[in-house]
Amino acid sequence: MDKKALMIAANKVRQGIITGVYNAKCGHPGGSLSAAEIFTYLYFEEMNIDPKNPKMEDRDRFVLSKGHVAPGLYSTLANRGFFDVEALKTLRHTGSFLQGHPDMKGVPGVDMSSGSLGQGLSAAVGMALAARLQNKDYRVYCLCGDGEIEEGQIWEAAMFAGHRKLDNLVLFVDNNNLQIDGSLDEVCSPNPIDKKFEAFNFYVQVINGNDFDEIAQALKNAREHKGQPSAIVAKTLKGKGVSYMENSCGWHGKAPNAEEYEIAMKELKEEEAALCQM
Image 1 (cartoon, helix red, strand yellow):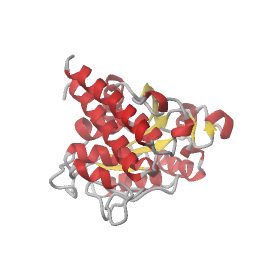
Image 2 (image 1 turned 180 degrees about the vertical axis):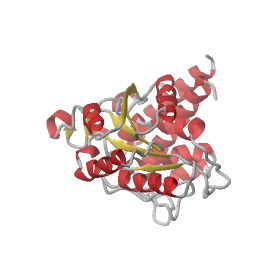
Image 3 (image 1 turned 60 degrees about the vertical axis):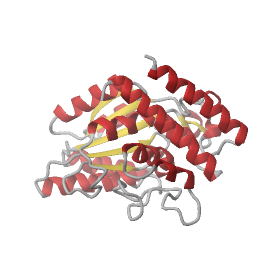
């Protein structure tokens, strides 16, 4: 896909996020919106996957370690063709397969159930090690939050990955600088994130995580770099795409009301129209 098509796809992902959270009357829009470009590039461009065969043996794997931003993953999977986009309206409803956190047994395209913060990277590391032991070529991608990496288990997993030189592992850190209770500096700063991962023997890149060109180049560099796992520290804007949600920790875990929903969708549809005219 060209950059314009990717930007339109990311916009559709954002519309799906807002639709899902609004209909659920709860959920986590802020971090889902900030990671929309990362989700979109991975699923529409980077990863070896097949929506018609979600369990394809040699597929690339993805683990959403910050599982509360499931609305972002679900919207991406739906827009990529894993299931009907209309299903997003059932998010968190009783009986829906789209629950508040990813469920690998119920959602096509989900490789790991997640949501207990800090645990997803360990699962991704295990997948990467399994690929090596089985002489498989698939790659493993993981998305963590910058607040999430305050969890100790993240660094145990990082220590193991760096020691084992798992160069088929790519970790994105969604560095939007806000977590549920405030800014990173106010809560428990993990900074400097890049230097910490370097100390654990990761190949580290710091990018604008809302820019497709920078995401593409970072992933190319990660593929070509051998002997170390990769950490891509992606600086993003929490709530990106919806003006009143941007850079506000208040929208970490809150659904818009009817009026706010209409405003958000109007903004996103206007952006989509502008992108289509580029």
